[in-house]
Image (cartoon, rainbow, N blue to C red; front, side, top):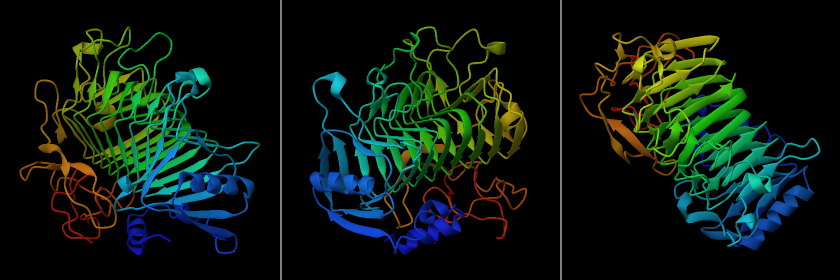
Length: 449
């Protein structure tokens, strides 16, 4: 069903194959295969999956656009929607929104009922034009919402969706949401840049609360929300961001790229490039402005950070009330104190009050306001792929960047170099000579597998 090369990459990257096979153990004994070309066929497959929760539905979507006129709801079935990993833009599920704002709907609603946890896997599909409004009982997830559910997204695009309180593109609550080699692009909140008023949107691209969220080998770009323009994580659970580019997002108040909001999750940031994000617009009401790259507010979980580039972010209108006159361009921590912290070889432009999490200014690759550290990043471009999926926009380093070959592995676990970068190009690791890989999501001299 899946390309053998894709399974090889998943395996050598050390990913949890349970995401692919936990529900596939008896798939050949209880499977239904369907080939779909129309929206009617897609809805029929969804209904069949809900009606037969003991079966695994493998639904192959032919290239084309699948317009829907009401939300796709999976509440107890097991469904795999399979499009085109090389060209997910050719397999598009799009919501046809009515003029009446109170009748608008998300594209996919994966919400378990009566104790059931539905399972959805997307492979090579584009989800777009969804809408989720809290006034009609949908707090987030214009593109896809996962509540009491398991959702895995591979080689897919989530684009131009809108949401209200949590996660305009994707939203997860009491759920598992996993993204691999996917693009989350141009999703925005319903409030626009008007923040505050007791109803502040969080997570333009992705929002998670009390969930297990993993974003791996993906790009999150050009999304917008009041807090957490790219990604917001709140409550408990886990949040892993690895080999991922977060760029060009706007947190109109705070947390342009990533925002950790009032939670105690276990957070792992590993070999990411978080750059060119912006916090703090002039229309953010009484909201504080900080954290162009990463913002934290009353975060009390655990945080591990290895090999990240967190630089070249900004705050449009700095907040004069921040501690010690900080602007919080790349990182700012507001009343946060993680109870477990581990770090190794991060590169931060201006550290401000985040040295506890990423390293002290003046040491290694950590800059401060008087001497910002330049990671030597190029703009977001097509920098190739490994031939197993579509090309993601990424930020390559210049040839003279200090990020190249700078990571010093400290062991064989999470603080070792990954096997490959965001594109799937090989990195040096503890088993190679020399073992030093690049800091950030892209390996400048990475080799094809």
